[in-house]
Each structure stands twice: as C-alpha cells, then as structure tokens.
Image 1: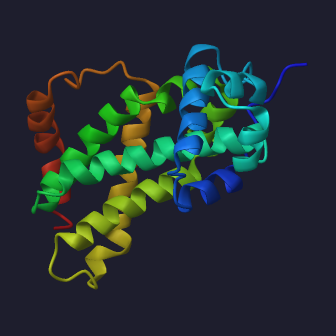
Image 2: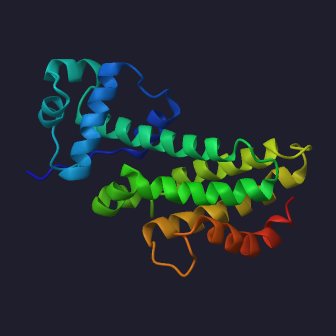
Length: 212
C-alpha cells in the first residue's frame, strides 16, 4: 500500500509554534528521518527505517514521537525554524528596512534551496500543495516575519503604515519568493549575491519607499 506523506496543516503549524526538540535522542531521530526523506522519499520511509538509521530501537522512537506523521511534521517544523533562524541571523546587524527586506529575500531563497524543504516540496505532491493551494498559513507566517522586521527598524511601529499597507507589501514579497523557489528559472541573477542585491534594490526600493 502506498503511504501518504501524512501531514495535516493544522498539526504542522502547531509543531512550528512549539519549541523544537533539543534532546540528543530526538535530534538523532530527526536527523535520521531527514536523511531518509532526502534519499528515498517520505512515502517510502517508515518508523522502522528511521529507528535503524538512527541506531535506536523502535520503542525509543515511539517514546518521543507518537508515530510517523509526528516525525514528518517535526522534521518540517525544524526546517522552518532553521529557515527563519537563518534570516534572523543575516539581518540582525541591519538598520534600514530596505536592507532587511532585500537580505531576508536573498537569505530566504538560499536557505530554502539548500534545505530539505525544497527537495521535499518538489518531490511530494502532498507537500507541494502546502506551498501552493494550501499555502495560506505559510504565507501568513512569512508575512508576519517581515512586518515584525519593519516594526523593529522604525520608530513608530504603531502607525498606520506598520499595519495594513506594510502587510500587503510583505505578502507580495513572500509570494514572489515562493514563486522563485518553486520555479527557479529566472532572469534575476540569483547566483550572484552582490548583483542580486543591486537588482532587487533597483526593483524594490521604489516600492519600499512608499512604506518607509
């Protein structure tokens, strides 16, 4: 019988909002699952495979995760945490909102492309759905991240500009980034960081200026 990927969007979002497992055994389980998902796919990976790859017994795996679905969701949640963590690290030293937007955009694309997320989304129809027709919650999370970045770099976070208008602009950027991740073929020079920054500043700074 063909396994489903087994991801419920509500459960996944709940996993993302919870702290990521940090104990050594949970990390070993998630590392093993990530390796298997990347090499043989989510559908072909069972708890037995994960236990064997991690060098742990099934009982140990089940003590930390109820089942395969929870492992899949935990792996994806960890990747999302790493994604936002990489953006936070890359933008922590920046003061201008324009620079935060551009660096978030570039780092986000690079982090996604280098992570397990891009591999799984492109290979698994169920996960692709989470980035397309069911992408609303993911878009909302990324949009709020950019809105928070705006508020952190401006003196008047309670102004009208820091709410609806900025949220709309942030959502446009998120949707553009998703498009580039799912369809990476583009004339934008994404392979050269400096050139990418220059191009994106030319394209986006006039728009960003309307909200800064």
